[in-house]
Image 1 (tube, rainbow, N blue to C red):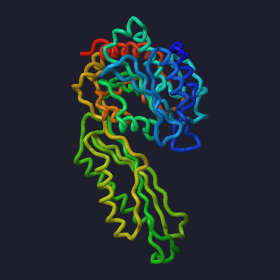
Image 2 (tube, rainbow, N blue to C red; image 1 turned 30 degrees about the vertical axis):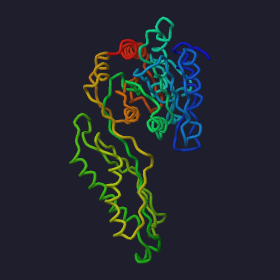
Image 3 (cartoon, one colour; image 1 turned 60 degrees about the vertical axis):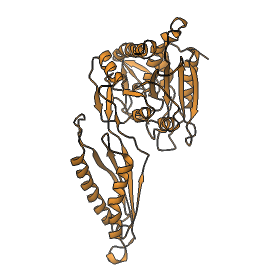
Image 4 (cartoon, helix red, strand yellow; image 1 turned 90 degrees about the vertical axis):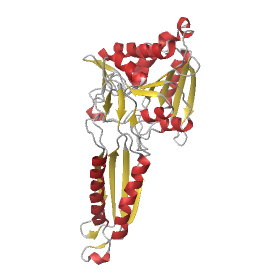
Length: 389
């Protein structure tokens, strides 16, 4: 066991460990080296650590590190994976922390390995013997797997009910503005199979692309109905969205298209259930397949992320507003918030950096956000674990 090094060294060592998660097997990597590094540091501080392999996802694991005991407490949570990167578009090595222009560049610097270094730095003083005895409720640092793809890590925790606490802060990059609300996300595929044939005679086949034309029309009609039925002005885009993302079909102009696939994305508002939406899509598209004489298969490309909705009046939301001076707000991107909320925790999304830098070449964390972030996290720990109300 090793005690954590300096804040900057922690950042350097975390950035240096590749932990890309991807739906492409040839570039997807294990997150275990990051988990092992964090476990070593946190064990050295006196945290009790538990590494949990994610069933069905070899090489992927979560870490739960706890300082103190008892019910309640505060979870500081982040994901250990990063997105892939465009090597030719970076102006420096993405796996080497580079300081320039009052910024720290590196893959995962704001999304979101940087949060772990800041959370450990904030927790360090509470691990001192003189402070540890004052903990009335535990400090928990949670590190998850595969947030950027399947959210399998957080999903596994919610399914197993393994993590219990009173409050949770997920350190996604929000510029340290507390977020209490975000839309959900579904990525769906519709595959139609007709019958190929010579284009000179339509009777020789059954055109899947023509049937997909009707499927698209029905999905756009469904989108319009959803947007009339569901609105939430807390979002910049106040309605659920449905985006037709990509379509593939056929193989030659003089052949009747025998197969066509459409992938689309649906962003539901809080209160809209993913399972119900999928059933509605199936019920609406089924008759088209029957009418056109094609085989239809509708499937989810991943299980989906429920919308996240905490109360504007929750204790944690109000505390974060008071500590940061920012009103709680909504964001358009999805997080692990719904899964921690399922475990019964008062949850917010709040961390340093900007989502505008995430998933981009030359991702960075501004140096002037480091000290304020550590200070706010220390105040959250004190309020939640030293003097909980």
